[in-house]
Amino acid sequence: GLNSPFQVPVIMLTVRGEDTDVAKGLELGADDYIIKPFSHIELIARVQAVLRRVQGLPVTSEERPFVSGKLSVDFTSNEVRVDGKPVKLTSTESKLLHMLIRSEGRLVSHENLLTKVWGETYIDARDLLRVHIQHLRQKLGDSVVSPSIIVTEHGMGYKFVSPANR
Image 1 (tube, rainbow, N blue to C red):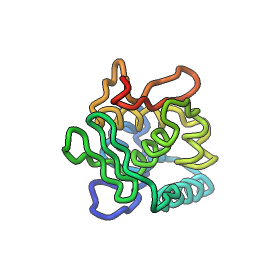
Image 2: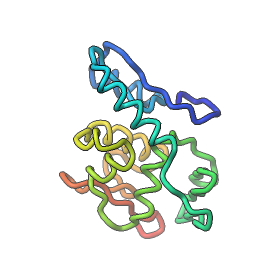
Image 3: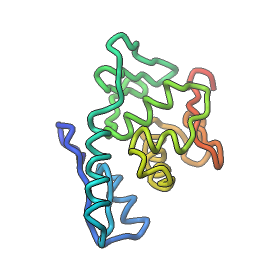
Image 4: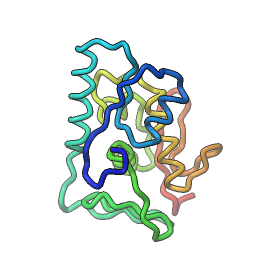
């Protein structure tokens, strides 16, 4: 998190609970944002969820890089390029992109993305998911207003549409 060369998870603990504060914290690279007051049970659950995320989704060594249009993603090295230029993704954004690309052309439900990336305790955290999807769209050069790479299926989830197929 927070532009570290290492994959160190960052959880922000703060009294600032406005949507803009949460969005800014996540934008700066935090993996999670907990608003005070919180219970120790919630803190432990969120730390465990972040640690599960950092350990990552299973990636097979024979998984081929994804190349389509101006986008290329190497899942083994977690390297993403748009128009040949490297794009820095957070570990959370990488996991979301990986899940969406692996289900290319098919709907991935909010619940599936939330539980696979953040854990069961986040099944209803759609605002958290939306913020990360918006950042991912911006980094991929996708329109935030009318996205065509990561398409919203309202009330259901998201679908990855290969840039070469648009």
